[in-house]
Image (tube, rainbow, N blue to C red; front, top):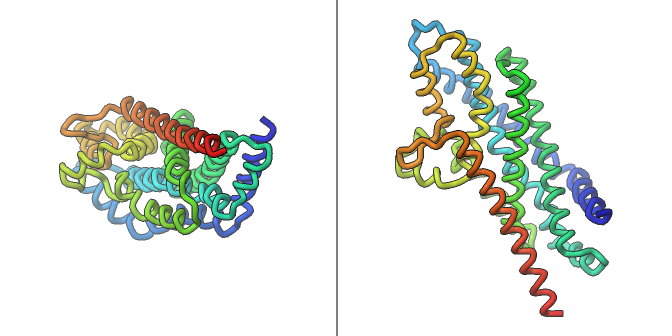
Length: 303
C-alpha cells in the first residue's frame, strides 16, 4: 500500500511539475469559456429567446441563465475527457523514456504500477476539472445568473466526478499500449478536436440528421454530456417552473439543448443515462485491467 501511495504521489507531482503540460490542460477550458462568452453567447441568446413568445415576459436574466448553463455544461463535458488524456501522457512518457522499465525491475508489482497510473490520472484530472468548475461558478455568479441551491451544486460536483472517471478510464485504456510520445500526442489531438462534436457538447444533437443522432446516441459520451447538461440546467428550469412558464415550452427547450435525448424515436430517461455511464465506466476499467493482466501473463511466460 505504501508503494502504491508513493507512486500515485510521484505521478501526480510529476504532472504538476511539468508547467507546460499543466498550464496547457488548464488554459484550454479557460480559452473555451472566453470564446463561448465572447463569440457564441449572443448567438445562443437569440436562438433561445426565439423559442419563447414575447408575451411571456421572460426576463433577460433568466435567458442569460439558460445560455450560461449551456456554456458551462458544454465546457465541463469536454474538459473532463480532454484533460484526462493530457494527464495520462505521464504513463506514456514513462514508457517512452524507459522509466517504467526501471520501475518494474525494482520490487514493484506491474499491477500496482498500472493502478497507480490510473488513480494518479484521476486525481490530477479532478484537480484541474474542479478548478475549472470553480471558475465556471464564479462566472455564473458574476453575471448574476446564479439559480442553484446547495443540492444542485453538490449534484454538479458529483457529475464532474463521474465524467472525470469516465475520461480517465477511456484515456487509460486507449493509452495503455502506446509506446511513444508522438503516438500519445496524436491521439490527444484527435480527441481534443473531435470529442466535443461526437458527444454533443459543441452542437446539440437536435441539429443533426436523425440517422446521425441515432449513431451518436449509441456512444456513452453522449449521455455523459446530457447528464451534466441536465444538472447545470436544474436551477434555471426550477426558476422557469416558479414563473409558470408552460411545460410544453420548457420541454421544447430541453429537447433542443439535449437535456432530453431520443434514441430511435424513444426518449432515454435520466436514470438510464446514469446506468449507461456507470456500465461504460466499469467496462472501460475492466478492459484496462484485463489488458494489464494479459501483459503480466505474457511477461511471465517469457521469463
